[in-house]
Length: 197
Image 1: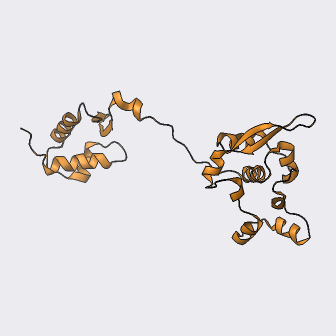
Image 2: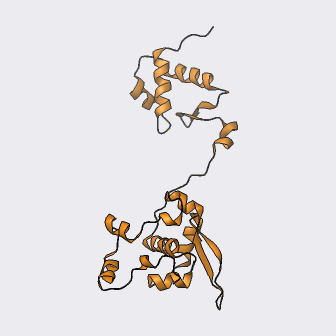
Image 3: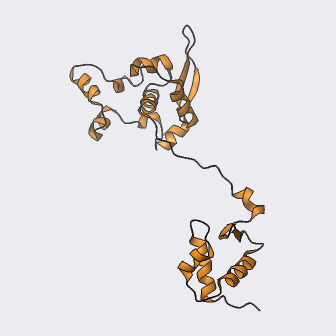
C-alpha cells in the first residue's frame, strides 16, 4: 500500500525539479522552509526515483535530478548554434542565388573584392550552396549554385520566387550605391538575373 506524499515532500521535489543548478540542503530550505525533515525527504525521493528514467542524486553535498546513466546515450544530440552570416557571406550568397551557376572569379567581379575561401565554406556547411561542376573555359573554374536547403530555409519554392528589383526597392533593401547606379543609367547587379557575369 502506497501512501500519498505529503506537501513537504512534494515541495522538495518541485524545488529540485525547477532548479537551474544542483542545490544544497540550505538552499532547498530557503524554498521549502523548515516544516519537515529534509534529509528524510531527500532519501525518500532518491528511493522513489531509483531505477526510473531520471534519478535524484547527491554530488558534493548538492542535490539534483539527472538522466539515468544507462539512458544518457539516447538523449545526446548535437546542438545547432545559429550563426549570423557576415555581410560578405550574405553578398556572396545573393550573387550565387541571382546568377547561378557562378564561379569565384565571377563573384569577385560582381562584388569588386576577393572572396575568402572561408566564405564559400561557411555557405557550403550551411547547406545553402554546392559545387555545380566546372565552367568550360581555360582553367576550368569550379562553379557554384544554390541547393534545395537554401530554398527551404528562405521559404522559396524555386529561384523564380527570389525578390525582384521592385520588391527590394519597396522593402527598402537596396544599397544606396545600387540606387545611385540606377539613377545614372547604370545597370543594377540584380537586373542581370539569368545572365552570366
